[in-house]
Image 1: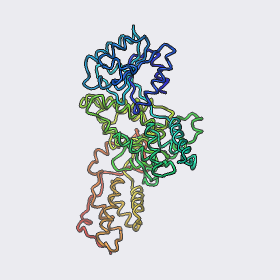
Image 2 (image 1 turned 90 degrees about the horizontal axis):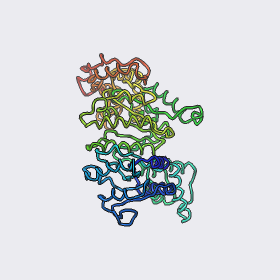
Image 3 (image 1 turned 60 degrees about the vertical axis):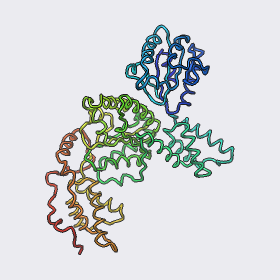
Amino acid sequence: MFAEDLKSYIKAGQPLIYVTALELPRAAYSIETICKSLNGEGYPFHEWKVTTGWDGTGSGDDPAEVFDWIDKFDDNSVCLLYNFHGFIGENPDMPTVQNFIDGYARWKGIRPRTVIVLSPIYKVAPEFERLFLSVPYELPTPVQIEEIVDVVTNEWVEQGLFSGWESDDDKRRVIANAGGMTENEVENALALSMIKTKTSVDPKIIMSEKAKILESSGVLEYTPFDGDMSSVGGLQLLKEWLIRRKNVIFDPRSKDFGIANPKGVFLLGPPGTGKSLTAKCIAQEFGLPLIKFDMSKVFSKFVGSSEERMRMVFNQIESLAPAVLWVDEIEKAMAGASGGGEQDSGVSKRVYGQMITWMEERSKDKLIYIVATANSIQGLPAPLLRRFDEVFWADLPTQANREEILEIHLTKRGKEMPSKSSVGKVVSLMQGFSGAEIEKVVDAALVDAFADDPDSPILKGNHLEVAASAIVPQARLNREEIESSRTWAFGRCKEAQEGEPVRLDNINIDKMNLMASRRVSLN
């Protein structure tokens, strides 16, 4: 916990502490309360703001004089500097930097002091970045959110605006949906819900507001989804494994049996084989919100900014628990981590290190189920894969799976499967197709069927056959890459589906008979 950690760091004589917080007023109040509680133990407290100087007196408001004042204070003083990052971040004032470096030696030795910098962002010049201990200020916990909700709604009850919760479940969902929001954001979302509904607090409105907040970060995105595992064709072994895991995860007796919260699952396979759809279905099946994490957007042109953005993102992610965290195409974000990272001054390698460390050390009490997907083995560092409960290889669908996927997409569009003989032809023509390419076949066939007879369009097997024959699958274009990934996955990954892998050396591309005329006889 933040309070206990900060007290321990102060008592241990840590000279420089950097606290990052999304909500400065609440963080400042917490730090001030913690520090003043130590006054009686010989730790005097002082605070500095550029507008009011030291302790609100107007004295020492010049940033250049800050260090002289700190040295004048009693030993073991705790000095809080508000928004000092502007003087020690990018292009800092070098005398200020040197003062910090010199001060560190004094405050750790003959003149013990603890200097706390409080800022919404982490900006420290590389010259002395390692002197600071970075301590993120946590967003409100579920217990604290419940307290915020109670204060606001009780006030509304007294004013006759709110008649109370319709059910305990509604209140529980509001508290869960508000996870990852600041105190001010929670209060604003509650007020907006009351304005829109007139008399109640709607959990959906709270979630909608949180989605907007996450999107504004440019890194995290709330992804609603209404489907379930029946939306995924094939991948039977993966789906069975996930259902078994779900039954264990959400059974309270599992904790008593010694089972810890799960780490997550890694899905590897060619593009279009249902990995992203499965990630969405996992969240729906588990009954948890799905948060998409775009790691590539973390990287910044400023060296050091990417690392701090990752620190803040991880802090925010943990505040969203319980949730499913979806990291799509993770191999692209990790591209520079498996090499030397020279092209980006080693930023990708350091960010990768942060990711690995967080996955290993994150709170075991908070359920963040990570689903990572990758299309290629290129750029995937081996230590990353060990941070998951299991790694699955999602191969191209077998003949039986292609038929299942075809039926899913036809049913989704309100269409029936064609005759058995026609289905067999279509499925055969789609050898080597991914699920996404099978969906393209269905869409193209519907267009042809409508174009042939707009007044009474009927989808027939011939339309599907022609549509399938017109597509050259990626499996033929990228055969070598898929074969290489298959070879790598053998013995390293669990198979996501049953059956022998689809052969890629005999994909049917002889379309002369079907393509002689784009028009098809529908007799």
